[in-house]
Length: 297
Image (cartoon, rainbow, N blue to C red; front, side, top):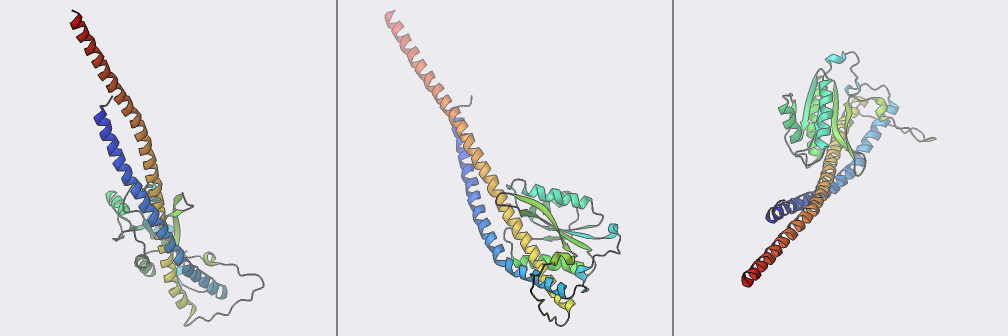
């Protein structure tokens, strides 16, 4: 059995760690609330963009645009597929990073010509260790998702798509399915399908008039850029929310485990203390008996 001093040192260490994990839980909780508010504040704008695109396609269903080009005449093995992978900047988030990197690995192994875009320090270090080529590393923290950063990512990817360096674009991120669960997900960003924007108009409501200037293709190009930025921004915020949620759950589990360890160590400490007291009492009694025998002799 460990000495009382060793048990006390271990209990003190666990208590100090418990304070840190509890503080991290509180910080993640605060960041999660802030990120959710940011996403809710921008959602109406991007929903309006989607609705506008739907209106254009209702009026001009056969509009020609590069963002709807499915590259059907190209051999699948020759297509260059872009993957935007969003990870965290650090650990202590449970299986958050593992799930994203596992999904990304599966896609890269099944792709003949992958083009990799990485957001997040964990992802950068992971792909570098595996010696996987990274087309673009976005060197800023994912702890502060902003529209400016989303626009920077979107413009880089869309520029390559417009110049034919990419045939398809996917984003791999983590989506919150509910308040306690999140899952790694892959969404196709480009090219679009017209069915993705189909919104069934209300019954008995006449079709609105629509004037597109200078032409439909130019209008679609302008909307496409903002729509793409919105999707990337939404993925960044969703990933950030999922990261904070995963960290909260991990820290909560750590606090609970620390409490259980302290309880078990408390029992061991009390037993050791009782054993020491019993030993001291035994020594006192033995000494008293020895003194009594000495006097009688």
